[in-house]
Length: 287
Image (tube, rainbow, N blue to C red; front, side, top):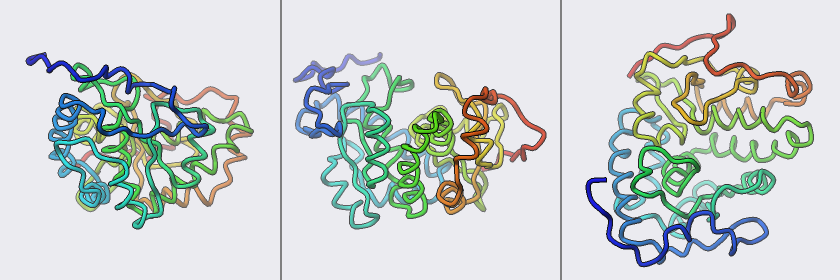
């Protein structure tokens, strides 16, 4: 670390994973005044390096959503301020949570058009790798696309699908859909491939890698294929799936009965993340 940060006015760990004040639905108050100057400086560093990259690598809808939210580049956003923009626009709002929350509560929030946003922010030594999502990942990576109606409707449909997947013993399959389509999705545009997944666009390294690197496979979206494909949690992805539009993603999630997929594949091994099947349609890079 080049510069030692100033001593914080509170213990930053207290904001990370502190569930003691959580309500039954795991929401909490953001307590924005508890963020330190160092917390805001880390946000500023992360924001500055990603905001320039999304102009080149992100889906136009993501870029438009970022501009609409109008977050300050040098301060962690206030959730209440964001909701005054987001809720009239899309019917969604964001709610503060202390960290990862149980699946049932997560699905319930999405089904009711509430996106959980973690309140704590990473340490400076974690700028390039984070074990679990913080407010930069959740806010910068996820919230902009909640301004896009088809994607927002997909997210609501995903939340509604959660209890059915749990009942069918197929939660792993539904988690793959979230991973590949929400966290690490790519979209084809007239300008070439662009990223929209939050795990990509909140990561300095993976933003360019997902579009430009010759290493990963880029496969045209197929719902069954996504539901069956395992993923990596501790490295750049070996496979990305590419949608043609957010309308395609919404209709695939909303108009499809997942039950036959669950019955056929819930108890079978997943497809390895580096495998290309004969039926896959590979898509070339391009910026």
